Amino acid sequence: MKVKNIEKKEHNVVSFSVEIEPSEFETAVNRAYLKNKKNIFVPGFRKGKVARMVVEGYYGADVFYEDALEMLYPTAYDTGVSDDSIKAVGRPTVADVNIGDDKTVTVTFETAVYPEVTLGQYRGLEAVKTVQPVTDEEIDADLERMREKNARIETVERPAQNGDIAVIDYEGFEGGKAFEGGKGENHELTLGSGAFIPGFEEQVVGMSAGEEKEINVTFPEQYHAKDLAGKPATFKVKLKEVKVKELPALDDEFAKDVSTEFDTLEQLRSDAKSRLEKGREAAAENLFREALLQKAIDNMQVDIPDGMIEDKVDQMVEDYSNNMRQYSMTLEQYAGMMGMDVKGFRDTITPSAKHQVQMELLFNAIYEAENIEVPEKEIDDEYAKIAEEYGMEADKVREIITVDTVKKELGLLKAADIVYTTGVPVAEEKKEDKE
Image (cartoon, rainbow, N blue to C red; front, side, top):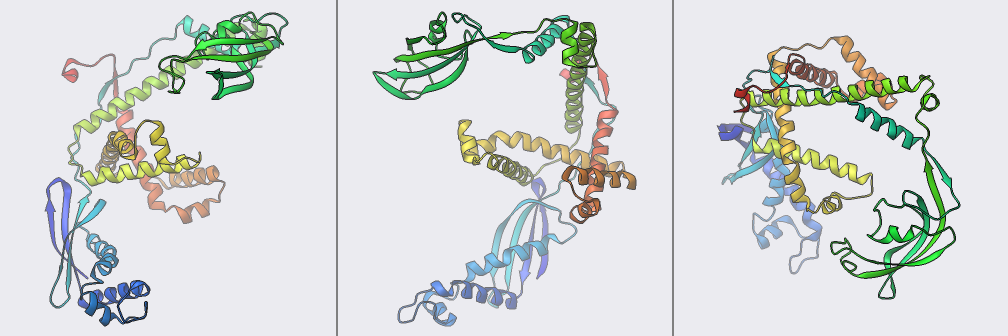
């Protein structure tokens, strides 16, 4: 096979032709015949026993050409992109096929290629970083969540009140008939939470353990089960137990119960403030980095081929599919839950795919521009980290993941750090940035 007619087109697309020798084409045609032989029928001959020349005489000389070409395309394409000038990305297309009189085949491919990136400013960029102070109200709310987490649930012998946990058996009827999904046993319902149909919980209030009651309600017009929406229903309810949530007192003893690190409530409160401040700082830093990254992307010049983004979408779809399989769910089912089909799902993730491609192009360009080097120790440490994470020997990891791959990944992280660590936080956007 010979490569010829390499031509650069718009939007980082390259076309090239691969010439396939007649002998190579003949071999592929014969393979196509042997592959299909058992399914070929020619009148007067036993199925699967027809000679190739007979089949070609009956169906035409080109009967096996399509299958033969399909066999040749992958090797022909790989031969073409082995040329150092073609850094293919995305999915190729066959633009033209010509079979000469001497059976020399010329296949013309088109493929997206890795685009040239012209970096703009990526060092010393300015972006807003605002860390809001933690208020006393937020600290109080955090301590309240701790109280809720450490609450005791106790049974009480009195009629149910709002805020109680009512343990109930229930069965719903519409038009005198039980409906699907309307039955439950030992269900714990917090009265006043609004978790059930409007009017239901209010009628449980005042019931005592062991009491049975018929509760009449009307389903909302916008109820998710269309066959019940807007219809009256009756629930047969038995209250089995009334429970209350006892919150611990917010005092020094509570602080000691939360952790042995604390002796007083004030220490616990101080720790809560510190933790909230760290969380707020981390959130502000993430937003700051995202803003720096977007500015660096906006400052670079690159014409990204559509095929490169499509390839990233394919990778993301495959990742989602693998994740869904862990939950015994298909991507089609997942997309359906979100009110769309797979095409709609692909459209939804395309902007994210484009952003990921932009990031990769940016960091790769910085990696090359900065001539980033990765010390051997950092590479060794990374292998040790991967080995520990997956419970493998470091030498085994080296057999699976090449040194060049690890070196490049670490180098790209260093490229990203240049953008982030040289960024300058400002209190607010300058006017020229907003325009």
